[in-house]
Length: 390
Image (cartoon, rainbow, N blue to C red; front, side, top):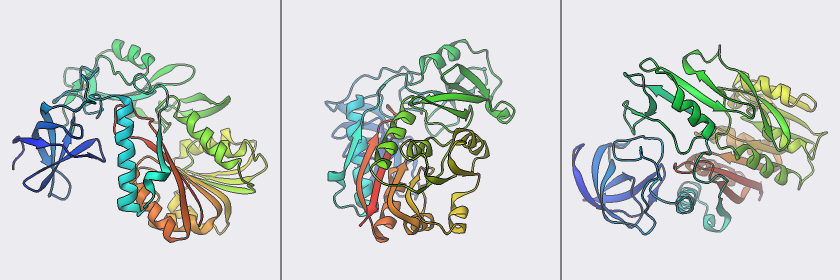
């Protein structure tokens, strides 16, 4: 088997990462742009990590799934944009695939035997097009702006992105030509849509306002913010609803960003004391402004260092770690320091599952996992896991 070989494959099930699984002579093939129960021809791209399986790209549909559709995006094809994974099926079927991924990861990596009973996935409007409030584009040698192709440094020029907010597309359509390899971000806030040169991030890191559930939040244009226009609203509502069920004297907000989740807790517990721990200095600066009226210490420190230096215990801990998850050492310490409830927001189901295994080993029970489809047309989604003491 070599890159470029074309195989006829029977697609089995969805896999984490936007692929579907097939097998050829006992070797696992991760196939792009396929759907479960299809028969396709696919071209091998490269060996997967571990060198025992392969990535492949669908080139021809022999027997199509009943869920397959024509992609509404002109750039979603064999040699096109690498940004989306599921333009070839409906948003509702995408959610069913993502739920299967979540359940499989929790069962396999987290030993959660009742995962199918405690997991669900939710649509978030808009659930298909024009939901994304930030994109990052790069110029090719001709100065045309676009996105990189899948596992390739080549750039697919883009005139319009169907998942980007329409105000972003208006700017994208009128951008002057760029220099080769020049990168920019186009960011929509409540007030305006702005262009931020990536190479000059510090100089152009403009402070912008965003309103979430009637509360104005300061943030940085090139800093982290949930890209789906309703993601922050949704997560803030979830944390508010979970935290108002309990008494909270003190809480801990880890990987806290600009403080929206801490603010959700404080809505019903304004006298609670808390810590907001975030390694990104600009985000911490914004959190200080956003939480200045409350008894919250906003600290710009790495979670994996700070948490071992503090001996306090907390009624509630909420965490929103990066894709790699909290990790074994931090998760053990969170379990030790939490008195009542843990709210874990995860952008990667595999990392969540590994941290779930740690928590359950330390006497915590995974009560439920609600996933939210904040990234339609891609394989990504966000999960909110609720733990209580077993």
